[in-house]
Amino acid sequence: MQGADCDGDGVSNGTELNDGTDPQDPCNYDVNSQDLTIVTSVWNALDCDGDGVTNGDEIIDGTDPIDPCDLIVGSITLTQGGDFLDADCDGDGVTNGDEIADGTDLNDPCDYLTTSQTIAPSDEWAMLDCDGDGVTNGQELIDGTDTQDPCDYDSISQDVSLASGAWDVLDCDGDGVSNIDELFPPNGGDPTDPQDPCSVNLDDQSTTPSQEWLDADCDMDNVPNGVELTRGDTDGDGVPDVFDTDDDGDGVDTIFEDYDGDNDPTDQDSDGDGIPDYLDTDDDGDELILWMKGQIQMEMVIQTQEILVISMVMEFQII
Image 1 (cartoon, rainbow, N blue to C red):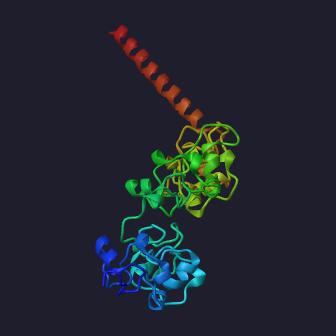
Image 2 (cartoon, one colour):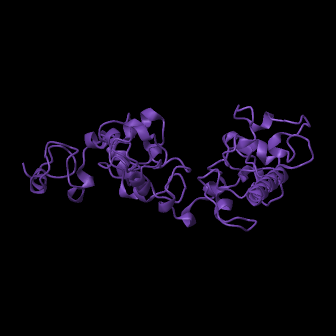
């Protein structure tokens, strides 16, 4: 009986006993002990690994009948199941069965739903960079960032030289400057942060900023970036209005030229000349700019103090 092959898998009963495999289970055998010339037609018709390809076709294809991830898709003739559904052929942490249910590619390690990751991804997957942000999948798991979001990463973990071309041309912070141009400014200047919308060289803007950026307020003066961007540099001090807390250079910060207190300096025009106070160095139309008024007021105070001193001296002399 030891010379017989009860399960027809091409391995004699005696050899299976020596190998520690089951002589009555046609799918439990050691490949190295198998004699393909004596496998039965019944065994050939089986699908031991559940990949949808019969054992016989796998032998013809040169694939492994007991490896659910070793198959030629064109040879699938049976419904896939068993070990195949439980396996994770692309190593992304999502079983083949779940990938089929999700409609993702079970042979693409970067095509998966994060919510379906139920087993540990492979080491090969961990070394990949699915979103092309220059941070490996494994490191993103450690950092707690999204392996499928190219704009969600920890810059400390990033190797820019490994970032993809697709990442280079993205504008992660929506400021109108591509990621790569933020790191390597085409017009010179200091590098800026691709993840900080208010860290930007306006001269490097090559695309329209996002609505979020236009609605934001980088200099915290209650005037949106989108409004200030169109003004350029009102007072010519070299600081664009987007970043200038005193847009007209009159010595009064823009946020304090909101005299009606509605948190909108753009609608305040004290002298009715059509120029908002925050852009008007002469808010009341008396042809004196605010800093000059301050200077005059200071001089008047000094003069008043001097008169008081003189008066006190004269009174003292009379006494």
